[in-house]
Image 1: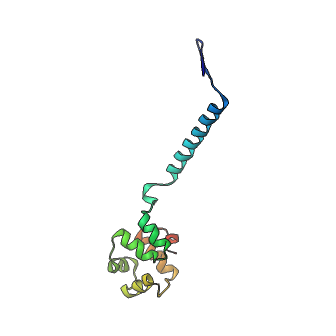
Image 2 (image 1 turned 135 degrees about the horizontal axis):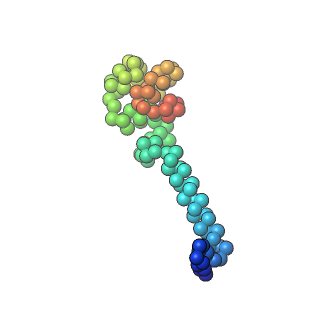
Image 3 (image 1 turned 120 degrees about the vertical axis):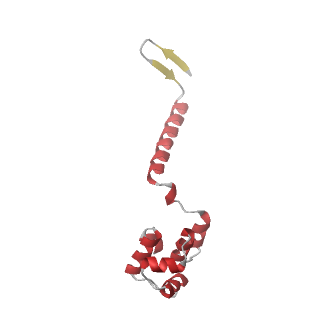
Length: 115
């Protein structure tokens, strides 16, 4: 690498591969910054929770337990009966869209997270 300095400017000469490596690093840093701006840490789910969802466990139950909410409290907050909620969590009943919206609101998640 060769460096030249004049009164008003400084220049650096380096091999193309080094220049291209610097450009790739700068682009990667910009991409990482953009992603961090789109995703907050609150949006990230712990791995054990993700594993439970992937295995097919009820998203309502998983998010309820993750939030530390009792079944009775969630049922009351969503305006559904506890037995109805229990059946939804067990997979014996499918919630209506209105119930799904209420559960999502009570759990502070997107409705898509529960569907």
